[in-house]
Image 1 (tube, one colour):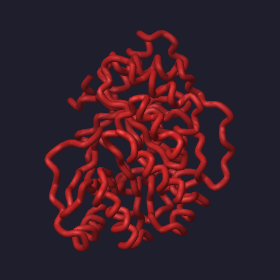
Image 2 (cartoon, one colour):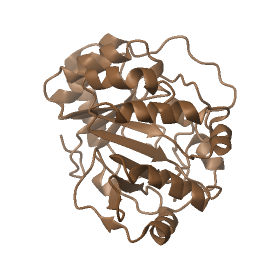
Image 3 (cartoon, rainbow, N blue to C red):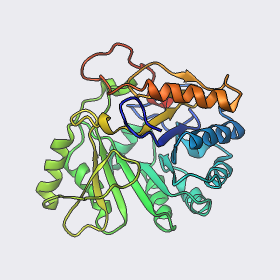
Length: 318
């Protein structure tokens, strides 16, 4: 369906857990007690997705927290993929459990996987994630490449502390493999407010200076809003998600569902529609429809902190 600004809303990011096995400095406090259970059960998730499909949602991304920590993840992916009307079901992960899960996820029908990886430097990765082992992520990436997954993406959130070498080394992963590297500008959300922001225009200049001229691709890859470029001799591509320096809200096509069952129509706003109390499908659909019609024109991160969601990102969903 369309919102009041004429944007086609066809994409939902659904957080299926707040739990995570890392504590990245811009996402999760150093010491936070993990929930024992997840608010959205498998049946609740399937019911929600079916209602979203009837409203015109045809793309779903499962996020977290770390979604691979859900024991019923494979059942969830299989069940969602069986629903008619969906064009795309994808997953974002830190990659720690991909060595075991990449092949089963591909067999379940997953269309794409996003792996978070902010640095190839072993010590820097350990610092950012507060103890993560980069070898597990690299092994998980290799396992994903060995499957028939159509698209494998790597998400990097650079800061002013990210070195030129780190940016280049990440890009080089796409030279010989079908990988899309995406550089994502830090959003001033939760702990991200304390991280030094790096403009993607600067990142692009660094990459083009070393790799050669970057040529824009004239096709959409995935759910948006990344702008993709090819580099000379590269099999994969380089993408840039520039929410702060190049606001793309005019083309926003998404909704977010938090792990505790709240609908968010804009990442910036602290307002949310609680979905779990809505037991009737018709009431649920109508409430979501009204929320979509009230979706704001754009985020206001640069202008004001008024009504800004102050929760850490693991609470909101990646």
